[in-house]
Length: 351
Image (tube, rainbow, N blue to C red; front, side):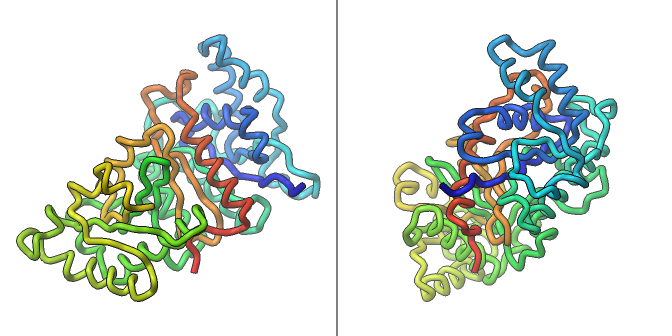
């Protein structure tokens, strides 16, 4: 029997729901049957979450608290160096003290800590100590306040792994979308488009779908403007300048892709059934329909990296942080996708 993959979970922003949902994952029997989860976070924060849970969580929710309190805690400098088989563990990064954390508050210190967990997990994955990284949510404002120059997880992973090209994919049973641009304002989107960038995302998406479903992908791609530009009637012919040439090149390379599709009709039930994934040109073009259909179960996958990285597809939920009511299903789904990729011994979307 092959060994279970070892997955590095990152705690996310300590002020959000990340510590809570990671706590649940470390103690969830269905997770433990599939992998060995190792949490990169802060032990003092974890203990504080357990203490808060003992005081406020419902009786039916307290079983994970008892199991979590028994988990081994290892300093980050020592973890992975003794040669022993890994077990569910909290890797203590000592990035922030529990006394510095105010649940539900934007904090530069928490933003910096969240980045530190990611950095440590990426190093471990690049060394091969873990088989993939699954991230809990960070808060982009806190990240910015901390001085980190990257806008979000996707950009952090691309930079720290030195990926030549990468993109974000959101995966669910109901809909799968990928994005040509992500964390930029609407006015900046046309400036970020190029034939090569659109083609890169098409190819990364096609490769990822082939890895996940075991056959060639059927893709659609959205236009930028209403009615996909209506032959220049709307916009500045972005469809003709960037999307159409990329689609033609992709088809010459054997990729089954349709478009540019009118964005307002691309996600109807009939259209969704035609495609394994739809390439979108900006953040909300893909995120809005995806979250309408799969908010609690969607998975964020970064394509094109030399390592496996999946994530929840929701935010830090500061309004319910540390209250014991956060839904962990998206994290469980992200772990499941990472396990599938690790067991297949393949990265996602690499050429």
